[in-house]
Length: 82
Image (tube, rainbow, N blue to C red; front, side, top):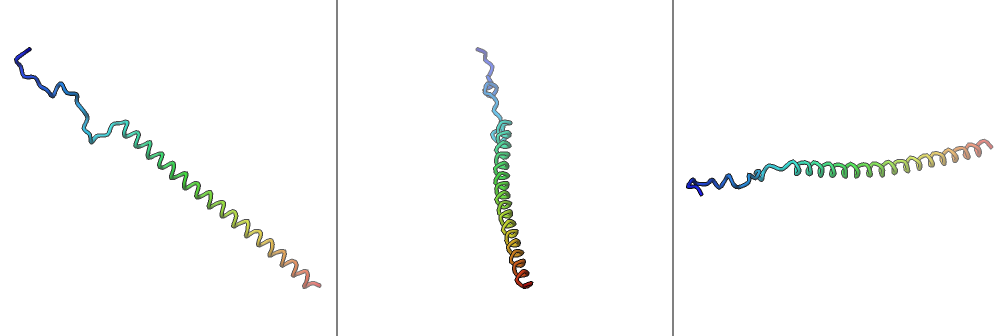
């Protein structure tokens, strides 16, 4: 053994500061953000499809109502001709 004082800090492994996230943590957080964004986009798409389906139903009902109205108008016109 030597009489020189030993530096204890050199034998301890250097740890990164706790405030700096590792590359893995950064990538995982980006992945989670993309997953959240995908779920939100899926939810918006589902809502738009439901809205579209409702609009198609309303349009079809309006078309049916117009057809019925034209039929009634035609019947009334035929009755008035007689």
